[in-house]
Length: 503
Image (cartoon, rainbow, N blue to C red; front, side, top):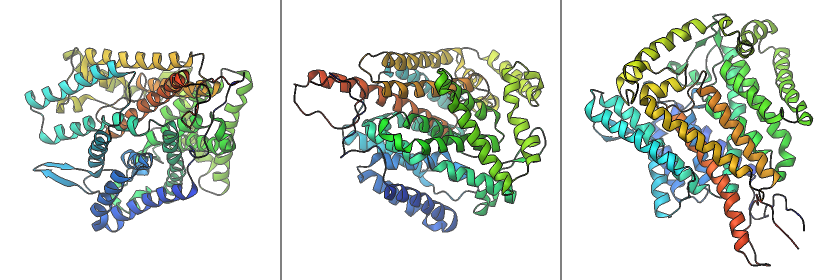
């Protein structure tokens, strides 16, 4: 007897072709052209994309494309008063975006194709979903919230449906890996947009839409920071690079995945975003810090980012003085926080003032919160995490989120203990769990990873949970299918994530 490693049928590859990758980013470039240069083409172009996505069998391709649109990389495809993104008027005062239509269209496609996935997290998801929906309808009917605010919140609720069609259409793990592969090169674009900002003093998006030139200042020096835009997309690429390198068929691409993770690390430093740098560092330590032989990989990751930084200094992108006294001076404060020196952080006073304001609001409606109302929007603050949940849904809703977190932890740990799961599957499960811990670190300290007032955050969460569901279901279903298959019979080709006996 011998144990099979991951088996990948030649007819089904989890690696995307160069031509497919080129087409994907050509469509992204065409979207920029249609939205920001030839604005009259915006609506026809997106309608064409919707038509193609409905009839295409490559669902991973179109889900990845609209996922990027929703994450607004470098500020592109962000809906503002000055943006040229198309709206479709549905009823008076209510308009739909192409992203809304894509969500509805994929749900319809899922229904007619009778595609579904058995969710192992369905019980906490159902209770949390019902509570959120109930809070929304009560707020819409019994509060004085305006139609505009209600419509804004309803968009987040609609995007919660991503968990269903993402899991249904990407239930073949090969397709989900292709989805992740398509996202990775966007990190290069985000880095280039930062370099452009450092050289020109304005965001890249300002070339096409000057009113979208968002300037964020360094709280230490007052200098403008190279804002990334779409940081959740960057976060997704970061954990995806580690996730993809766990599979043996990707061994030849391991250096590519390391480069992507290094670029993500570098972007966090250049943006002087402390919480993102802290989460990235935390995840690297969690992934490689448990085994002595793997710890040098943390050094390689950090050294790679340093080498790229030195190269950018060498070619004159920015000075070593700017790196030391502006970028690193702010980012390095994460280590002060870890060492218990939080009082030395420059923004600690203002953040505590914000927290007092939130606690005062929570104390007035502690059990069920303010719901989806204008009053909730006055008190939520994305410098904090779980406090936003308390503001919107009270302690009752917060405990439902804790129930979901506990169920997710159990889902991954139980699958990891399966004796029939191979080492590669267990390593990939560990990446998912570390990523989840990174999200919780942000949620319980400085940033709301589970916000319901930003559609981009909602979609990211739905994709992350569906990926986890698909991966665990793949392990369980393959094991069960093999147990039921007669000796000598052909099994469904694809990645095998369990131990299989052979004579």
